[in-house]
Image 1: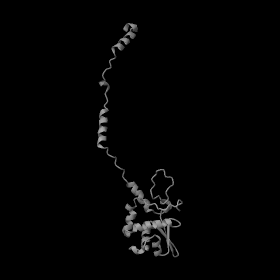
Image 2: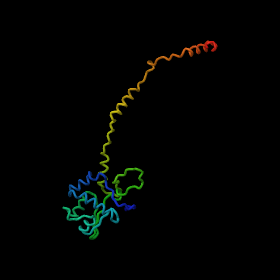
Image 3: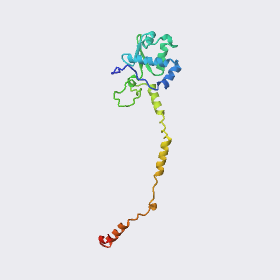
Amino acid sequence: MTDKRKRRWIVLDIDYPNGNTLQKLITKLDSTAPGVWVALLTAAKRHNPQGHFSWTTNHEAWNTIGLKETDFNYTWDVFIRCLGDLKLTRKTSRGRVQQVQIRGWEDWQQIPRTGGGRNYTSIGKPNSGGPNPAWDEQQQRLANRAKPAPKALPEREREIESERESSLTTISDSETPPITPPPALTELLKALTQNTSIESIE
């Protein structure tokens, strides 16, 4: 699957520096391996079809990804074998031409066109079959992500809230004082009940 919009960048997980993939690459090779992996991803983006990388010699492979083989303590074959052990790539060969396919490339390099302020993860669930440690790692990280603690109210806001609650006191019916009507109203009511003329009250 190719990037139909022909964007000149790759999707990389924002937690890649703290993820298991980076740590495993460093453990198996050295601290330069994560950078070589990213260089390979960019080369796979330029490849046709995208998500693949082909070479005939190790020297050609290093040059294609833009690095010098003399700058590293491991060979190209060792690097590719490490990627295969980590289930990051799938290697095939045809005669002198060797090729690796980036696992899950079709899923996690395609960003939906409908934006609308949504947040999309950089690794999608693979539907092509086979293990995808990058997807598993991200899902585990999301599952373990703790909810943020509620923000504490500033001191002044807490005081205002306390004053508001203390002022909201209720008065029971027994404590309500009796309502005494005005004298004129009392005389009017009495006149009405006794059929007395209102003019005599005035």
